[in-house]
Image (cartoon, rainbow, N blue to C red):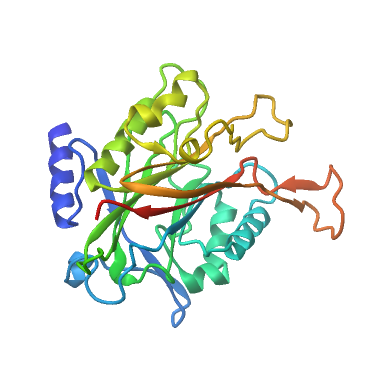
Length: 328
C-alpha cells in the first residue's frame, strides 16, 4: 500500500506539474470562485486541464511588490463563531497595505457558512474550499484565500492537502502561485502552506515530524512560507523552525520580543505563548506584527460591553506578515 501511495503521488505531482518531496502523499483539489450569474461557488479547472503553463497569459504578479499575508486561528468553540469571524473579516479588509493571502484555522461550520456568504469574499477572493462541509469527524477546518486583486487566474497553481501523521487527523493545506521574474520570464513558483499542528503536550509529540514534512514541501519548491497555529506547548517545539532550516519571521525581525499570540490577557489557565508563527525559505521577511482581537456582544447589545456579554473575536491573536521573493 505504501508503494501504491508513493506511485500515485508521483503521478499526480507530474500531472499537476508540482515538485513534491518523496514519500509525502498529496490530495489535489480545486480552487473556487463565486459565479454571480449562477449565484454559487464553482470549482476552477486546473491549468493542466485547460492548457498552458502556470504563469502564462494575463497580468503577472510582480515579484518586486511585497506579498501581504494574514493568518488567524479563529477559535471554533467560543460563542457566536459567525459574528466573531465577521469582525475579523472586517478588520482584515480594512488593513493597509491590502492583504493578498489569508490563512484561517479552526473555522467552524457556522464560520464557514458566513465566509461563503460574505460579499467581499464572493467578489474579491479565490478559496481553497467552498463546499461548506467540514472534514469527516472534525469540528473545524482550515481555509486559504487568495486576493483576485493580486492573483489573477493564470497566477494560480495547484492546491492540495498533505495528510501527515496526526493524533487529531490534521493536515497541511498547500498551494503554489506563480509570478514573473525580473526578466519577465513566467513561472516563478511560490509555495504557501497553511497549518494547524497537533495540540496538547502529548508525548511522543508528532509536531517535529509535521514541521519536517512542511519544511521539505517548501524546500522542494525553492521558496515559500508556512503560517498558522504551531501549538508549541513543549520546550522542544521552540527550536523546530530553526532545526528544519526555516526562517522564523518573528524571531528574525523582533528578537527578544516574546510575541505572545495566545493567553496575553492573563485569562487562560496556562502561561501566554507564541502559538502562531510565520516561517519561510527563499524569502525576505519585511514586516511582521500581531493583530489583537477586539470583542463582540453575545446578545447584540450596542455600546459598552459588560464582562458577561463580551466575547473576544478569538482566543488567538492574528499575525500579519509581508515578504518578498529573493534569489531570482
